[in-house]
Amino acid sequence: MNQLILDVQGIVHPNSSKTHITYRFHIGTQGGKLRIHFAYEPKNLDDREQSKTMIFENIDKYTECNQRERIQAKWESFLPLKNLITVSVDDPERHRGAGHRHDPEQLLVIGEREASPGFVSGQMLAGMWHVTLSLHAIVTESCRYTLQIHQEEE
Image 1 (spheres, rainbow, N blue to C red):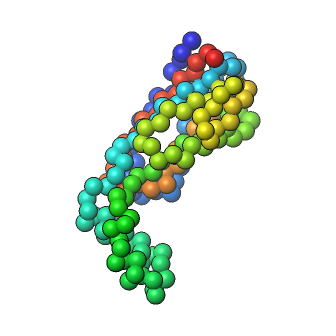
Image 2: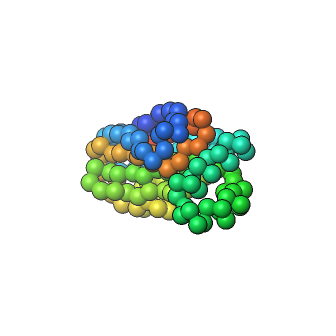
Image 3: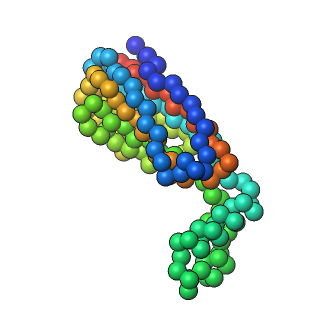
């Protein structure tokens, strides 16, 4: 059995940075494993001038005055600016882990006997599960994502 239990896509923007999007899905029968496919694009902000503006704004915001000139001189070391969205999962009773990966395409597994790094294997409970997308940084004008979750027999 290989059943698609969640299939969503969305578009996020820079004002979504430092927020979360949570999707709920129901597992009807205990057991098996989840196969989560998550992808987003673009990964990098390719506009050099826009990147420079953002870097200087953040240097001004987050650096002490006496350090700004030194850090501004090496602003290019921060390139390329990247979008970052990560995935975490909760079962009906507990947190099952988080994958703070920088890969813009990920295949994650959570099962009774195996789990991708950052996630916990264990009993696959029937009930309401949650998957959370953490939008750490959205630096491009828009960023598209897709999320599919399949339940499979082990």
